[in-house]
Length: 170
Image 1 (cartoon, rainbow, N blue to C red):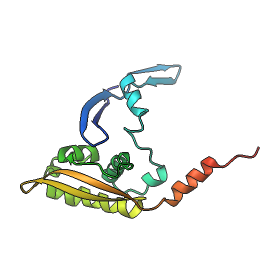
Image 2: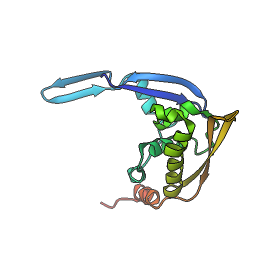
Image 3: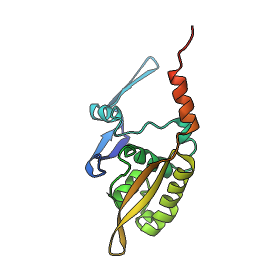
């Protein structure tokens, strides 16, 4: 009940429409060794919204070495149909990717340590190809836009779909 979930809520064009800090659990009960818990109503609505969370197969998730890559991939998938994230401010990208360490406030460090390796890993291992474009103010990068291109359908995704669609004989 003391774990706080912090969310940046983006609209379809990548603009921040709000921010939410919600307790992970609204209540818990332990009775006769059985633990019962519930999520707060606001969090339940967000968890059920496919626009907020991407559904990523565990086989795809296991391919990533870094949590930053997984977070970037999950965010990118939300914009897959429109093929672009639009320009999103750099501090928001850092937060979405989970690169909140103060050393990443320097773009050169963030780009070299987080962004480039994550983009490379996604492009090598996933069904989408992403390319980053930077918006600058003077010499400083202030926003990033990702263009998303479909490359191919992953074999394991095809297999999962086929299994779901097969009829079961009894």
